[in-house]
Length: 276
Length: 275
Image (cartoon, rainbow over all chains, first blue to last red):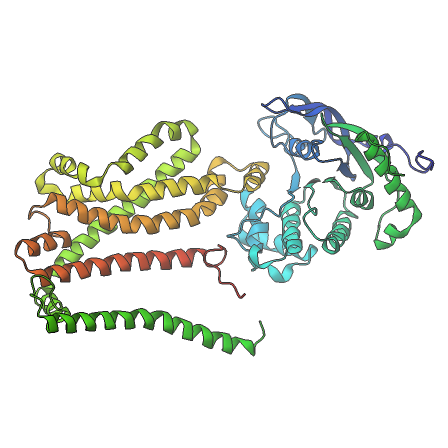
């Protein structure tokens, strides 16, 4: 079968042409034991993009996400936030939300207090924060669970709390590290739709780490494919299907074609023949 | 949970609680009864094994002095315990903030812990002086009791979910905020477990130190036991011993209840399962 991408698929640089919100310039990361996690990663991500970082395990996609979040030091290169305000000490004020693969909730605090945490750190009183927290909980469909403790919730509900917490500061960039990988497929599909609904109509950026081709195509308008040993970017693809997307999107030929194309890129990256 | 099932579950619960209280009491009553009957029947001399009734009489006769001693031992134990918790937690926080301090000091905390308290007691008593035996008892009980708090809290502070800590850094939280918001609550179950051990050890420390101090300058339950032993007043000895046991049980009970209250909402150890 023809390996060439369908002609309505454009290369990603058209997306990158928007004013970038974050730029990575020659970013490298090596661990003390000599492992090179990332080598010379160049990436520019614009406002309102939904970018998936897709790659096999060990390609450094989670490491890259953590570096973007400012967790851990670069070995080389630089990460810039061109549009962001600078804090008093000159470091850029990162306006981020982060969702980990695990819900990472505080087990001793109820749902309300878990979502309150970022605002509490911003010195907002519970009373001032209350309407915003209830809004955020309503957004993820958990307004009736403000008093529940994490142990009383299902895996999907815990992940919703985690998302509500990440969105409570109204960040301009949401970083997600394989957030739905540990969930069952039904819950994952539902959370995919919820995430798209939250993202739609807002002018913010999502950087989403995943190892699922289908998930990345369904969600993103841009997919950055990464390869392992050393971690590097091997392809940068645009998914030009319009939003809103719903379950029906999974049924149309374009979706399948995108999946086939992304999958082919992924296999090429891994040095294997495409299964087709 | 359906409403119709609730009363059944509650009734079953109440029966279980009643059983949990009644059963040990029944065992105690049977034990004391058998003891009373055997001692009377075999005519065991009272300076070997006094009958429970005789012990009760001794308890009533010496009530005032025994209660005074109980109060003395109780206050020493509680003060040593509070100082152990405060000192243990403070040291653990210090250790968690600086790897260098932890590496430098932890071995000495261990040395203090593994040296038998009986062997340090005479030295401490000489240092603080025989007119200050109470202070010596406090120091000795503290030495025995602080280590479980220190080592458990240190472990707890280190066991904080790494991602939760990352999240705090992401929001620019200071070290102090990270400590108070996530590290300390994470360490709480460990601290409470340490406190339960430490509570018992405080009592042991207070009693052992008083045994070593050995003079009439101290007036706790340990001294009542030595005194009664010297006079072969075995019923009185048993009465003091029983008070010590009750005190130990009370300390454990209070700390267990405290632990349950603190953890009942969230920790696996305290949460009740319905399956």
